[in-house]
Structures are given as C-alpha cells and as structure tokens.
Amino acid sequence: MKFAIIYTPFLEQHPYIIEKAEEYFESVLAVPMEGIRYEYVPGEKPRVMYKNTDLSDFDVVFPRLSGEDLLFCEQMMEILNESGTYVHMDSDSFSISSNKFSTVEELSGSEVKVPRSIYTLSTETAADAADDIGYPVTIKLISGYGGKGIMRAKNESELRPIIDTLEVFEQDICLQDFIENPGEDIRIIVIGEDTYSYKRVGLKEEWRSNISRGGNREEFDAPEWMRDMAVKASKLTGFDICGVDIISSEEEGYIVEINASPGISTETSEVVGVDIPEEMMAFVKQKALDMEVE
Ligand SMILES: Nc1ncnc2c1ncn2[C@@H]1O[C@H](COP(=O)(O)OP(=O)(O)OP(=O)(O)O)[C@@H](O)[C@H]1O
Ligand SMILES: [Mg+2]
Image (cartoon, rainbow, N blue to C red; front, top):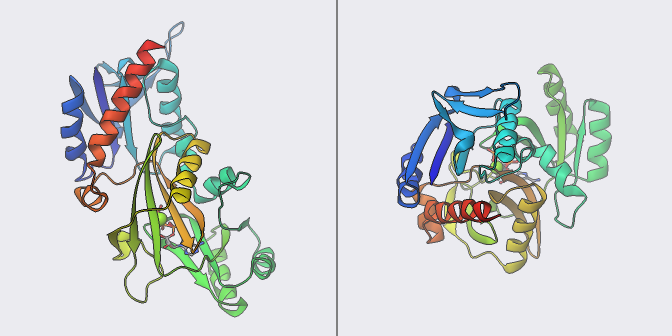
C-alpha cells in the first residue's frame, strides 16, 4: 500500500510520523506542498501530481498543512476524496478548521457548545454586542495563531481602544464570551472513535494556555462527556482525525478550536501515554483497507 505525507512547512515532528508510516505501508513518500500540482486532462479524472507521481493513485494521503493557501488545499482534498484515496478529512474540513469563526459557525447549531460569538465590521455594533455578551469578552483576530491575536477586555473602556486599533489595521472584529477557567484548556486528539486527552496549562499570570506562549502539557484524563463532545465536533466538521480544544468550567465545556494537524510530537505521545503517530497510521491503514473492500 502507498502512503504520502504532504506538508507545509517542514516540521521536526515529521520524520517521526514518516518512520511510523514505514512500519505500516510498503511505500512512503514525503511531499512538500510547493511541489504539488493539479492536472486537468479532458476526458480524464483530475489528478494530484508531485513530479512524475500521481498521488491520486495512492491509498492514503496524510496532509499536514498550515492554514495558508486555503482554496488550493481544498481543491486537493476534493480531488483525493473523489479519486478514492483516503484522506482524514472532507474537502471543506480544512477551511472550517482554519478559521475559528467558521468552526464556531459550523458547530453553533448543534448540541456541541461553542462560546457565544459575534463577528462584525462595525466598532459600534461590536461595543453593543459586547454589552449583550457580558464582560469580560475576548477579541480575536481571524488570522491569529499560537495565542497571538487574542485579547481580553473587562469593560467597555478597555474594549474601545482595542476595536479602534483593529479598525486602523483593517481587521474584522470577532468577539467571544470569555469562559472563566484556571488558565488552562483541554486538547482532545480524536482518531476515529478513539480519544486521547491532555491539558495545556498557561504560565503563571497568563490566561492563554498555548504551548507557544510558554504553556505546558500535563496529564489529564478527560471525562466521558468531554470525549463524546470532541468526537461529535470532529464528525460535524468532517474529520476522522483532529485535535479539539475545549475550555472547561466545572461541568461544562466549550469548543474553541479544531486543529486539522494535531500534535504528533514525542512530548504529546509521552503525556497521553500512547504512541499517537502509531495510532494514526494503524487507523488510516484500516480506513484504506475498508475502502478497497467497498
Ligand atoms: N472564549 C475564550 N474564553 C477564555 N479563554 C479563551 C477563549 N478563547 C481562547 N482562550 C484562551 O486563549 C488561547 C488562544 O486562543 P485560540 O485557541 O482561540 O487561538 P490560538 O491558540 O492563537 O490559535 P491556534 O491554536 O490556531 O494557534 C486558548 O488556548 C485559551 O487558553
Ligand atoms: Mg489554540
């Protein structure tokens, strides 16, 4: 069976997953996103090509992509899904997960909870909406990542200068209810029906719990309701494999984000006590085998 990982950018973690893939697949190819092209030949099915290799002919393609070039990526998932190559997401899943507010939009009508959120272009509307949501509110940049681009206002006098600044930088305004929490959030890695959980705890005096802002991974055995919620959210957004971020206050959890390429680092495997890349490879291989039978 043939497996390809498509990545942008190259990360230190990738050799680890390639090594695991080699245990499960006869042929393993690592492909930088820049090398990908789509070919449309009249009368033939569209193809995803890398040099002289037709990736739409592979059993599994495992994308590890950052949220850039969304349309280009979406096209790739579409062609692969059509050609019978197993990919761990639907064609629109990547766009949904790449934009926090698309994620909120996708989940908000369901039984899975998301923080109350407002998306507007007007500073006046934003100030009124914040009153409605109730302070404190978070203000998020659509293009934010790694904890950068998220702010918090405790009252209107803190909010006004922030949204005025967003206007200067021509940024859309996204407000979200601030979910009280002890400076930590829960990451649940979903692989099919299986879930693996850990906690990210922010630095002292830091309410953002991102690892890239100095947060730490800690062991955490998520309760059943939280795991169910993560599996439901992944299904609603069309993922077989993803990372679901949950902020939890006592008995309630809110989903803030879905990650199409969750951590495959050794640190993640260590904290959950399971070899995550191994679980992923076993799962995608089984999926490809099931597809052959169908
Ligand atoms: N509504 C909220 N209420 C309370 N805290 C929040 C809320 N949204 C986010 N946070 C905190 O801020 C951190 C960063 O927020 P978020 O995950 O939305 O953006 P990001 O981490 O910058 O994006 P990415 O994970 O894509 O890099 C979260 O890990 C969480 O600790
Ligand atoms: Mg995050």
